[in-house]
Amino acid sequence: MKTVALGDVVAFTNGGTPSRSKAEYWDGSIPWITGADISEAGDVAARSFISDAAVKGSSTNVVPQGTVLLLTRTSVGKVGVLAEPMAINQDITAITPSGELDTRYLVHFLRTSKPALMRNLRGATIKGVTRDDVAALKLALPPLPEQGRIAAILDHADALRAKRRQVLAHLDSMSQAIFYEMFADCSATSTVQSEASLIRTGPFGSQLLHSEFVDEGIAVLGLDNVVGNEFRWSERRFITATKYEQLKRYTVKPGDVLISIMGTTGRCVVVPDDIPTAIHICAITPDPSRLHSTFLRAAFLWHPESLAHLRRQTKGSIMDGLNMGIIKSVPIPVPPLSVQHEFAERAEQVATNRGIMTRAATADDHLFASLQSRAFRGEL
Image (tube, rainbow, N blue to C red; front, side, top):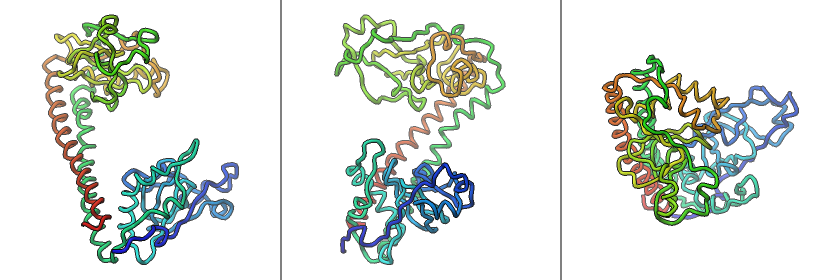
């Protein structure tokens, strides 16, 4: 099997951005795309349209249906295929294969080449790679029928991964749907302060400095532990036992509800049963005779009155800061505890199924990566 430089078997077309100051260039009939219009899955959907005058008067180019698109600036390595003719901006390199190269084989090759491209990133503000970097990629080039066979195998494996992701997306929304079904019409007749055994926020400022973090000791939880609205370990931060003695009042325990109050605020998780000794910046301990932790988390995330309160108090949909007063005054419904437990059980079943599906999806990704690697080593 011969190996070639990609630039020897493809043609490149660059793009550009028409002048924004020329009104006659915009709101025409020609779709014009940037890297943001290409999804991670490779789907392409234009949000802007330009005129014939824009194409003639700028560096953008219209490329035909079936052209392979590669992001060479911003989200470098993202790949898509055009379903219709479109104009492209300067972040996109359009690649047209020669008669020696199968289009789907090329798409899979480019996706496996992202690590190689990332190693060549350059640029002070907007990082990218050059056409020469792309052209220099080495490609194993079997006969066209063999390329088609390999591409079909990878297409099939990728389709299975896509179906798994669709199931995960469905599971991600299921707990919210269950909450709406059970509680959307349940009025928020109480507040967090009335139903919590304990609410604490801190430490702030000089109470805990970055220089006081150590390699092991008592865990300090942060935004990265609640991102995605599910508890996960990410960056590990610790303080000494001596420092912890000064901050013990911020200790979290299983069943506490943690809320992010700075940065990406409003994220909310329940502390798992196996948590080691740790502190967090905002923790709520619900009164177990009145409130289930899983229900409280769901109310913060999804109950209309709770959400409306947070948006009003933070003066907009981008919640850049919450404080103790706002947290305490959040209105929440308090349905019978038995109904809350029913919701928690249903949500736990969804979480269990999601965990199973996530592990399967991870296995799919590893298998697909292995197939891709073998395909372009000539072993598939």
